[in-house]
Length: 567
Image 1 (tube, rainbow, N blue to C red):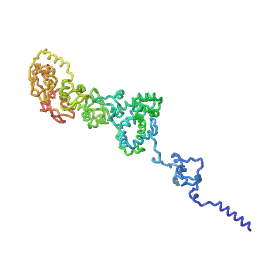
Image 2: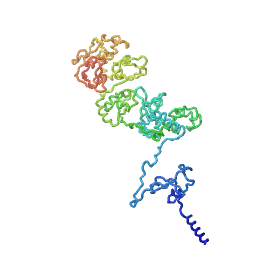
Image 3: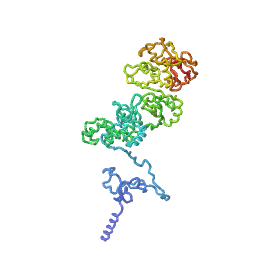
Image 4: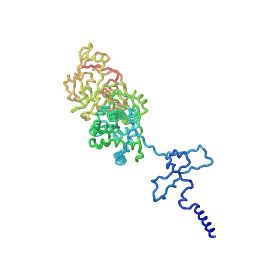
């Protein structure tokens, strides 16, 4: 009996041992079998699309002894299972939302090294220089697209555009203490070496297009010399000779090795790290905390050719835009007009305005080309003295240079001097005959001229038709002598007998009414109709201080020829 009870107890004990336990671990463990050792711990998104569910083992860094059981062999986390219904079919596919994908890291076509120095400048741009760098970023989109294209066309890495970012912040008017100018910060001699003109009238270092092409040529030469973009960039900052000397002195071609020594200036040592830091931020500004940047529109324009010394107001009027829009597109122009000695200057106008410009400019521009000479102001020069030097009236000099009689001249200042057009050879020969007293129907006439306010030797000679030198000699005048209103001048003229002429060489011809246009000046109107400024003022009762404005009406006598001749 005891043996039967013992056997029964043994059976019950064994049966109890085989029953499943109801502990905490069992409650957390799924009924599915654990993954095998061959299964990968992480599954890519492309693999997720192939399966309706996925097992993902936890990251070792995510667990700690305090919150996990000692053994993790049977632990894993189930991903979200897609519902399966009887209506499902083979056409079903899992859509991965854009937010699920990792953001692609930006690509670079220049070497990128991230070290302590680079990180230092990244932090500097993010903090101390944050506002300034934000402005640079806002301006960058205006210039980067077309600058990239120009670099690419010249066979250079496009990411070199970030040199201009740290050089000037893409500001065409940037000017450094070392007298470097423009978005690429060329000094005068280097700019001249690569074809950039810089003078009183124009500074092509400020032209975004021309300076980018010049920078591309310079950088290409530097790379050909050093065969390293870091050394080429350092050479762009310090000059190629400085970098070549440093390499020879320290027997290294490694930029990061060179900057360990004292020979290079700190500015040059920081130049490449700044370029790398600027490129990193500019290509992914949100990553570095630059959000909400209001980027400027990409720069677009057309080009047209205009004569030398064309007023920017006239160009703007022909384009039907403001003068400021023309100036913004042409930061290289330092004055109010296109430069002299550039007969067919190519100026940039707003995109899409080429057709309307061509139509309007043909009407607005008189079509008469004037001759100009550039005068560089010297010490003790005065406006009247300059006018006498070139034997021209002071008034056109003032008008074309936008000055007045009280304007102060500074040494080195450039003035445009409008010169009379070369006379027709036949007229010149006739004038010579009259001057020599050889004209068959000519006879000398003595007359007296009363000087009026605003008169000059040039204006009197031009009005009366006599030679300015003869006028000076006959009246014992010298350049410094001032003409006083009311004084009398003796004038000797040679008159050709012509019954159609009025007495004393007065102008004949029909009278017209001229409506003043935008950009007109008295000097320009006088030249257009072969008149003198004094004549226009006399006919219209204009005083010295009177100005003309668009829509004003002027009385002009045109078509006649003055009968007085040079003497």
